[in-house]
Image: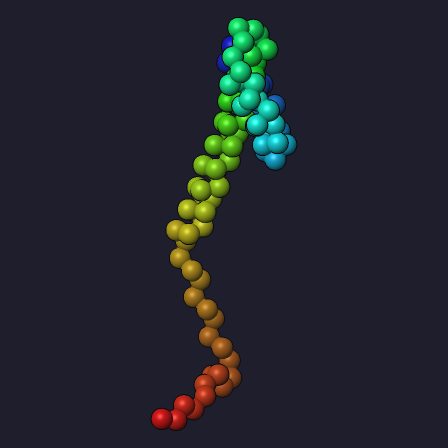
Length: 91
């Protein structure tokens, strides 16, 4: 039951737009820093860390994609047909 609930939450969080979340980062950071012993403060802390988790996930994802692409050898250029593009250089 708990794992299923967490899975559903993760699916919902993954569907959120990072840019929209980033615009809320400051709001929830300020709420988190203004401690109040209340459920609203607790929710603000959770939301702040969800936003950071999405940002961290995307950063790791992008780094891994770049790494995968940079590990591939560059394709060798196909030989050109016809005369080579050479010019005479005089001393």
